[in-house]
Amino acid sequence: MELQADLVLRHGFAGKACPVDRLLAFLDVLLCRAALIVEAAFEFADSYKRNSNPSLAANRDRSFESYARKFDNFNKVKGGNARSYSDGHKVLFREGDGLISYFGKFDVGKITSGEMRDFLVHLDSQRPAPLANSTKAKQCMTVRQVLRLAFEDGLINKIPEAPKLKTVDKPRLTFTEKEYKKLMTVARQCAQRGDVLRGVQMTQKHVHLFAFVVHSFLRPTEKELFGLRHGDVEMKSKPIHLVMSVHGGKTGFRKAATLSFAVLLYKSMFMPLTTPDPGAHVFMPEYKNRAALLQN
Image (cartoon, rainbow, N blue to C red; front, side, top):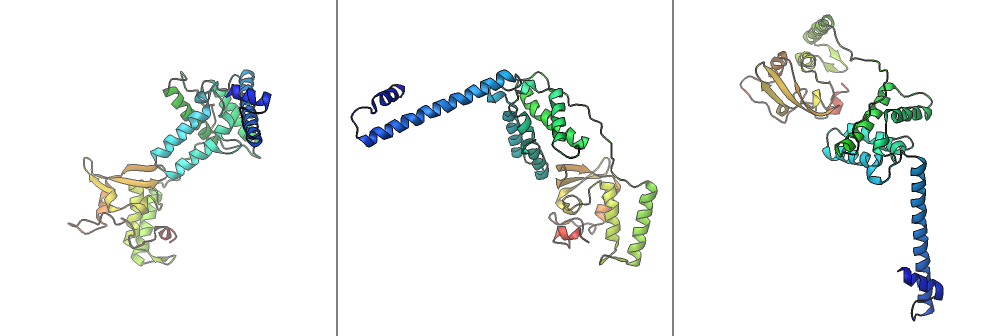
């Protein structure tokens, strides 16, 4: 190819050919030469960058971007909670200041705690107000998860620690025992009187529902409490309790165990000596539209 190109450039044609063929051959050679020149220019630019910044990867296989894409593909294939995957994907691929945008060309062995700290400063510099420390911690956690793959492949000897960040503990709001007893007392009174709230009459089913939330630790959401079906519930002994398969919760699929009192509450949902329909919802099965249920 090189020899033929030289002949065409020197003599204007290769062998006997019509003028059009010679022109086309000449243009092909020019395009080939241009492509080689562009490729060499990119190689020179990459080599120059690596020499001026030793943190950059010598080849693509050692780059942070390569392992970040592997990590993303792994999470995508693994399945699980769609929202959780989407959030992690955005952390990696966010345009402008995502992890790949910032660390993409870095060698996985050159990313340190200091580099992560510089990245957090960069994030704050792009915004009118600093990010919450919990958000920053999630960015660093994702960096370390990506680097764990490189560690498992033997490219790095250890995973760098995340920079220390002060976090404010914000525990979930909870009832005290006194508040819980008052809630249940008032709920029973409302059910006995047949009070109507937002167009719905209070019954003992609502009282049992409130108690089940407390004794099962399920979130009162469409996917958790109101997504629970009889086929998702198993009765266990020693000690007596329920094991529930929770689908599509905040943390994805999980098995959740209850306190003993939840067993009595669950059994009150159907007649003794009968087996409930495995596909039926445990709570408020009369609502076919589960999203509408939460609006009442």
